[in-house]
Length: 276
Image (tube, rainbow, N blue to C red; front, side, top):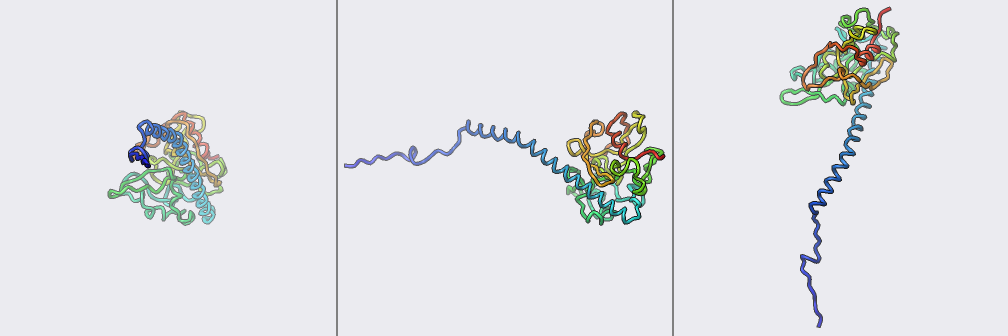
């Protein structure tokens, strides 16, 4: 006689697939460790990508500027004035279309056709400034500003006796490769199309140095610039006064004394020179 042995299904034929509390805690801890290792690297990679895009934007806008100058008998577009390279002044008001509508100013810019009609080159990808328009949050359209010493009508008050470049042939000192043309300006400093580097006290009276407008520092305390010869750089700022705390949606006080600020000196050395 054959004897059949049966086992309860609760013990044989069904496997327990759950985790114990200890196992879950170990998995969570491993995930946390991996995240802690990977996230900084991902953040640096993202910042690096933004920096590369920023450099490319500066080069593209400088090329557009060069093409315009070549078509204009060597005369430069104004950084500020009736024939300025771009009209409009930015702030944080949704009622100001210059903030968020490229059709307001940018598509009418002297350089628009020369930059391939691409609105992306007008703004650093790391600039996340916005305005609210009828309840909708919209990105602002521009972070690039032009060197105020390029054919501006109002820059004389920021350094008497310094050269205002009106033709590209005027770029004899410090020369095209050492004279910045476009720069990303801080979102709370951005207004019109020019960025003024004040020359008060240059070069040997550091107590008189100022920051008139503020450069951006979106790339780990560094900002993007392009130069009149066509190359671009990311400049690391070293003085905390160049990078004051940002209050979203508010403009910063401008034309502020900044004695002995080496960032101010760096900018002055690459902006203009005394007229001989």
